[in-house]
Image 1 (cartoon, rainbow, N blue to C red):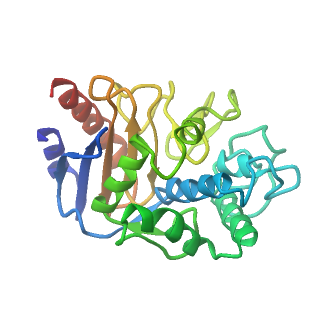
Image 2: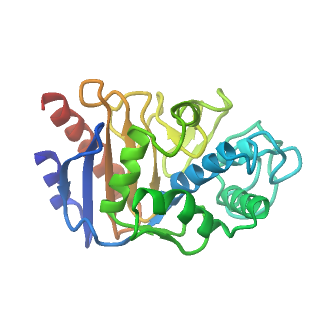
Length: 276
């Protein structure tokens, strides 16, 4: 895809990217697809997927208590548990504010590990990474931010998000729909959003502005970006309604360069898919 050539102008040491079609095929790529990059918060969708599989197999329930008093697994996944960003300290009553929380995902990992008697990195490997053939991906620590992967591996995850095989389609549909609608909060790097809509582990674009996806991204777009200069989005309405995904991994920390570079790339990818 010619649109991915825009990455050549990014001020990053290394980058790799791919666009995935609804059938799971790669529509285009850039860079070394098997180069491993730290994912930072792009780890969260992988952790969330493992949590949703734990729900489906009956190991945990979305509405069982987890995290701070009054919170549930659902609250932890949706960043509404009330926990602070990076410490297990309650800052609000559950369900009242969208406080983006690494601590919440760490509490989620601990909760699933206790329920299954399997360390969460191992559970993620057995439930998600191994079945999808993501052999270069690992979780070396926090389920909020310590994943490492390649574009090649994440194309497999993106294909799963476009056409789920591990999860029931209705489970994924629920996870990529707004949970606790109307809740406000800060989208890291982009300021206060009203509302700040999320699903279960996936950020939902809706009408947010500013945003890291493109102006032509549909409101149904979901995904995540990471402070290591990484992102993964899925737009169910791209490619003339067939759906498509885009992954970009870099080794430069998120900052103004990404705010400027990512939306034009997304818009160019969507325009090229529309004309394909």
